[in-house]
Each structure stands twice: as C-alpha cells, then as structure tokens.
Image (cartoon, rainbow, N blue to C red; front, top):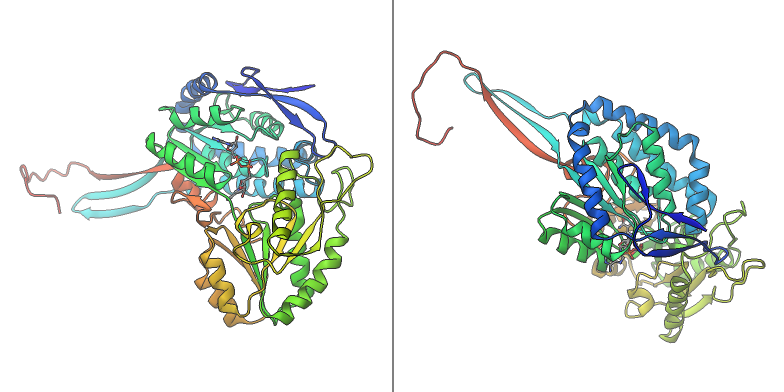
Length: 494
Ligand code: NAD
C-alpha cells in the first residue's frame, strides 16, 4: 500500500498516525497519508525560515525562471498529474486536466513577477527629495487546501507566494494528498531551492499548529465556511494575515428570453460536472416565470437521465463518484430531506449501480423541482450532483433571493436582454458573476473571491490581489545631502 509522507527540507517523512486514502471509484483503500501536528509544523517552519533569506533576496527575474520551468514541466507531466488527481478524488481525466490548466494560468501570471513587484516613484516630493515604494515578502506563509481541487487550489497560492519571495508550507486535504507531493517534485525539478516549499499532511492538528505558529506570517485557506471562519478567527488572533475562502450556494437565473437549450446545457455542466463538488458549481437554477420553468425542466430531465457516469478510465464519462462514502451518504440524505419537505423529485440518482464498481462512492445526477428557500436542500451547500429548481415569479424576486442567501461566491444570469444583465451585474451581492457564462471563475490575471460568508479576509486569491496579500508595502522618502542647511525643524514635515 502506498505511503504518503510529509516533505520537509526536501526529505520525505512518515511521522504521525496514518490516515487511509481511498480510490472513490472502486471504494478500495489505496494508501495512507502521514498526519502531522506541532512537531512537523515546527520542523517545516524551521527549514522554511532558513531558506527564506536567500530566496527572497535573489532577483525577481530568477524567481520568474523557476515559474517558467514549472509551467513547462506541468505541461509535459499533465497526464500523470491528472491520473493522480482522478485516482484519489474520482473526477474524470478531462476534468482533472481542466484544473491543471487553471493552476498553470497562475504559474504563468507569476512568471511576470518582476513587473508585478514594480513600485511607484515620485520625484521631488520636496526640494531634492524623492519618494518610492516597494513590496517586500512576508516571510514564511502557509496554505491549507480542500479536497475538491487537489492541484488547482494549491496552485492558486504557491506560485504567487513563492514568486513574491516567500517560503511556503502547504497543508493539503488528507483525502487526496498525493497530488501535492507530485507538485512538490515538479517545483523541485523546476529549480526551487530545498526548504523554500514544504508539505505537511494531516487534519485539524496540523491546521491548528499552522495557525498558532509564531513563525508563520500569513495563511491562505480554502474550504468549507465553518472551517474558514474558524481559521480566520484563530489565525488573526495569533497575529497573522489571513484570507479564508469558504463554501457556496450558486444560483443561475434563467430569464424568459434566454436560449433555453443553451441554459440547460450550461446547467448540466455547472451542476453535475465534477459530481457537483466545485465551489463554483451551480446548485440552484432560478427560472423566471412558470412557462420558463416548465420549458427548462422539460429540457433538463432527459439530459440528467442521460448523464454518463463512470470512472476516470472511461473516456466517455461526464462525471465520477463522490469523494468518500460518508459524503455520498450525506448527499443522499439531503435528497431524502428535499423529498420529505415537499420538493418534486424529477430525477433520483440514489439508485445508481455501476457493474464492476459496486463498492465505489457513486450517486447519480438528481433533479429537484419546486424547491423553496426554507427547505434543507436549499439551505445546505450539498456539494454533490443535485440541482434544485427554485421557481421565481419575476426577475426582482430572483435577485432578492440571491441577495438574501448567506453565501456570495458565484452566480450567473442567462438572458438576451442587456438591461437585465447589466442590472444583475450591478445589484447582485456576489463576488463572481457570469452573463451567459455558468461558471465565472476569473482567469489567472484577475483575482478569485466571493462575498459574504464565502470569504473571510479582505483579499481574493491569485491575480493582482495576491501580490498585495503576499507582500507588505514599504515606502521610502530619500534626500541626498545638497549642502543646504536649514537647522533642526520641530514642526511636522510638510
Ligand atoms: P473542509 O473545510 O472540510 O477542509 C478544508 C481544509 O481544512 C482541509 O485541509 C482539512 O484538512 C482542514 N480541516 C477540516 N476540518 C478541520 C477542522 N475541524 N479544523 C481545522 N482544519 C480542518 O473542506 P473540504 O470538504 O475539503 O472541501 C469542500 C469545501 O471547500 C466546500 O465547502 C467548498 O465550497 C469549499 N471550497 C471553496 C472554494 C472557494 O474558492 N471559495 C474552493 C474550493 C472549495
């Protein structure tokens, strides 16, 4: 059985109790991952602190070289990376390649770090005096990541943190930990000096050790809202800079004038892709008007029934299994709750069986109609292949519903009406908005971040916001002796 260890100072270390790792398609245990705590985090901080000075003082252009090489290596090894992701997460090969490509975008953006770190300069702020600013790295920073994007989310953080000159400690999800170790190998091969990046595996004990360690200056977290809130509070209390991205409940509004086939296709990909285990998955469709709703359901029902579900080895599969049996059962419980509370079960995925994969964590695509905002199935994030249809009598009700929801990660509107689309983009209380785009994840040179309880902290991840998150501002005001002597001045300089 595969043993997955921490990587500290370039060495694989198998310490701490072991946690089992499963292949969600077969249900078999395929490995076990080491579980770190205070001792492993102490060791990682010590090695990262020792490596920080040299790494932070080489030229940004040399750090950019590592990024260019990392990009190339990811390209040549992407199938190997995708296989490792699928084996522990369960997502299809093409979906895994998609997350690798989105991670690569951040590496590409980080390759421009000499430009991104440029400060501003003001000449002659007083006679013979200039003022300029620069951004300096924070020191040792850490990232804590969820199971659902084992490559992309660590790559939302590592490239920018490293390119800015920081040393980095990654605490990945214990459910699909192998991808992080392969990413480490690629960084090392790309020329990242030993100790600059360390991987500590584990669960709560490792997270708490990261949050409490005085040698860690900042923490980036991505995961569920309750843990994001906890990480933010505990990390801030320990004096760290923290950005903590949480869960989501993303709505897609379908206006009466929308191209309904296009909207139905968009809902299929956004609702069931990656078995709904995406923070930008659409879990609520909001058709405006009864006629729109009936016509949309008529299009969705056969599409959901025809979903191709299978393991990553099946190139035709459109979605795979859920990540664990416990999560599969929780999602099935949400479907039962929805039915019990009066939702109309249009397609029920609970009976799905796959020959040869009887022990896998499978659940078919499920479609619920006439869901209301008071039902559990609406209030819970779910994080599975379940699409709820909440019918709205008019556009304003649809927007008010989204704005009343505690989450604010992503949303979209499908319409051909420019007025409605513009009003939606301006008034909706959500961080990432799509117009005829179902999953509006910003490209690598913008930044990613929701609103409300989808984020705690004031910076989004990757893109320009991450330069600010991973650096601190220093402003220098300088004068060179001019021979003019004014004597001591006791008034405030102006
Ligand atoms: P999770 O919150 O269970 O775990 C995230 C990380 O926190 C993991 O590294 C885990 O080991 C750690 N953790 C878990 N329980 C902990 C505890 N009690 N104390 C301290 N640390 C703990 O999330 P998950 O199930 O791995 O991922 C799915 C969630 O992540 C969903 O809610 C999804 O919406 C969210 N997510 C959000 C975004 C975003 O950008 N907003 C992106 C991806 C995933």
